[in-house]
Image (cartoon, rainbow, N blue to C red; front, side, top):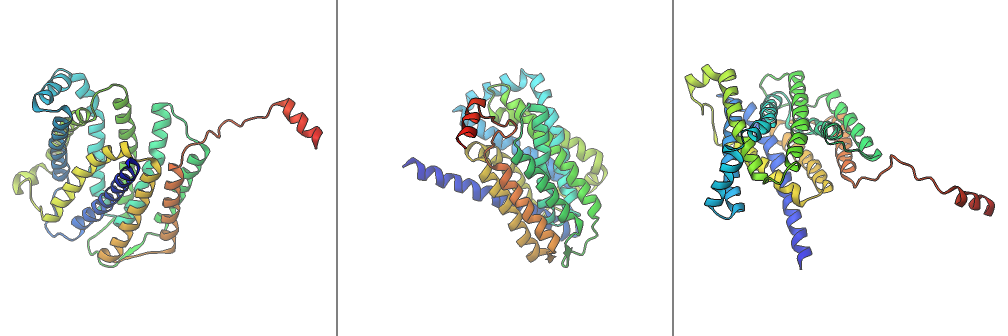
Length: 335
């Protein structure tokens, strides 16, 4: 009876991960284009890190089996391990840049265009995996990487037009922001994976270490980028229920992804990413009047197929198996 339960749980993970990814992109785009009193994205990123910290503390307490064990774990891995905090400050800085770039990108690109273009994180992560973790990719994976790049190029070749968005946009700024976010995502993800696999420290402890550094980094970002405006208008200026929903999705989605990775495979994650692209496109057509072009449709299709191919089980095609010479001669003689 365990198989049906396992299948239901995996489907649940797939559905939730897809909905969170699509809803976050569309909702963030909505908050950056329809509100007259625009909130400061740096405060939203900072608040997200704070919420993630408290959620991780709760998960650590549950995993430890009590508050006393949770407290001792925090003392051991955080207060007595400043080097570990410094080590996790690297991805926290990079993730802070990535999250701020997402806000900048979705202020200048449609949600569907962003969702497709952001899949460039796959080849970037693949490259970082090869360089930092000394892994290899199969021929099919490399082929899917080039297919994905071709699909993104088609999407950006003739950007889809919007009929319901009146705010000023700069697609070049948006694409540049996505490119920076992609580079940050690839490096930080692989770096964090390397740190996780270098010791037996709990995932939630590592998250807490990273979020503590992230809060400091994002607070510095608020001060340096929007300091005078925040002091004048307040930290929560421009916040609406939609903005709070975006922050909620960002907080829960970041933690949920780390849990989902443990229970699903690459194929399911590929289906999730492809489904999120489709849902984002439908929402963009409905909410923002996105007019789909032939190049966008073809590019999005190539990206979806490449994501699926990249997640297929890797086959070692780098070494061709050569038949034994004796066997080969016997076959020739028989012919």
